[in-house]
Length: 187
Image (cartoon, rainbow, N blue to C red):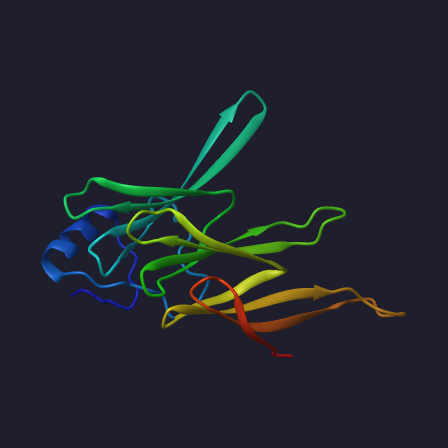
């Protein structure tokens, strides 16, 4: 039986579900959302009938290893509708209105803190509609009608004689254009 709340399945099974069950967008209610899975890709079915897959590929040339990350849409006949390449692992795939939104993180370096970017692409074409960057990491992303709700966790360094810093979580409401409508500190 098909569970429209977020069962990850292999591509061949997802195409059979699409043909038998009709379109539904499978979106996990908790956790970090789709990530590459050993032995298979994360798979979701969008309301327009596209099957969305999130994959990664690692290549090595000499001593350089590169990993690429891709969000792809397959049409009802199994052909490629579009694909979008992200610089880092795609997380938190959600669908507000006619968009597909996700986040990816950029790790901290010695002088640069960690950051996260939320990207929204057109469900019809895969072209980027908007992106919004944040200091910290996106820990939750959810569709809210035509916009998004995001929780961003930011590391706060220790002060005074403290040995450990803390984490500040901020709730953001983003509109359909990616603009911050309001934000509220959760901690």
